[in-house]
Image (tube, rainbow, N blue to C red; front, side, top):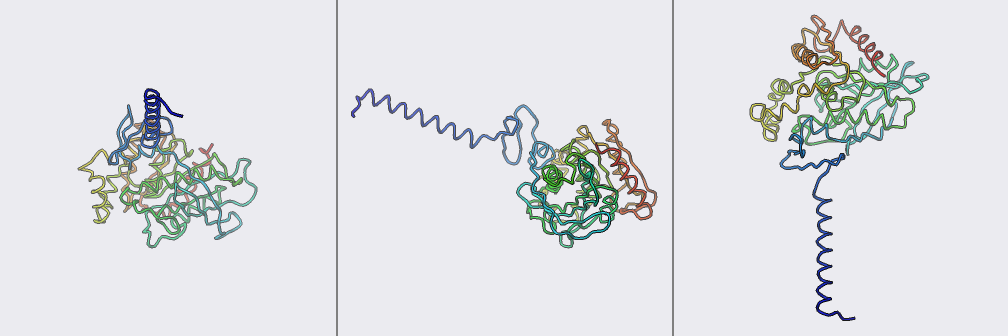
Length: 346
């Protein structure tokens, strides 16, 4: 069939319009980034620009607030230990694309109708070259499991059998916060009927206390109660000055990526939980020894005052003469922590 020149022109025009339309659709869906709420987000040089909202670095607590967490595939592995009160399992779960290892103590006996309430224990800094599965907070894991709590202790990324993330130090260990949040989500999404899917608490020691502080502002409704045990400061600049500067290699990587606190105060402000204490919904109790040689008790005193000023429910228990890991007051610390969880978990 042959077409007149006028008909050919119309066909060519129709084809050209169709091609332009298809290209436009492809560009829109492949190069315009949208978040789950439909709000436009543009990314440039590591900065997120919320249309009609504030700007923030992709490595920041505000960025985590926008993130959708998909912790899943919680698996009980080999039994490591057991006694008359609980069984200790090696576990794995997914945190984003990473597989994270850890341990879980699950009480024996008949669980409550909705399952054993679950406590998430966040350990402090232990060099990854010597860290072993479930290391840190072993006394606390044991005590709380004997009180009728299932206890999940995450190893975090880069620790022992967990997958590795080469950007962890440059990202100021923000990935650890993701791993802890995803641990909670993995329990929520699991098919382990003996575990509650609603009643959650969290305890963090030292660096783990800083992780817990980040969790309580990133996901205010995630857990029902938080215990901070000799925690780091709620201002990450204090940790930067105390520890990061001792490791010149890490300090240089962080300065190169984000600037120092003097060069880029906005970045460090958005990495500090205290900046967002207005978001906190969880009751908090802080335990700190007055002789702590690692984390200054003044850090916890200041955190308490800032939380009180924000109208939050917080208590600080000071133990005179106690160091970073409690000795003589350990039983009192554990009893108060256990009672606090029992009184506040839904």
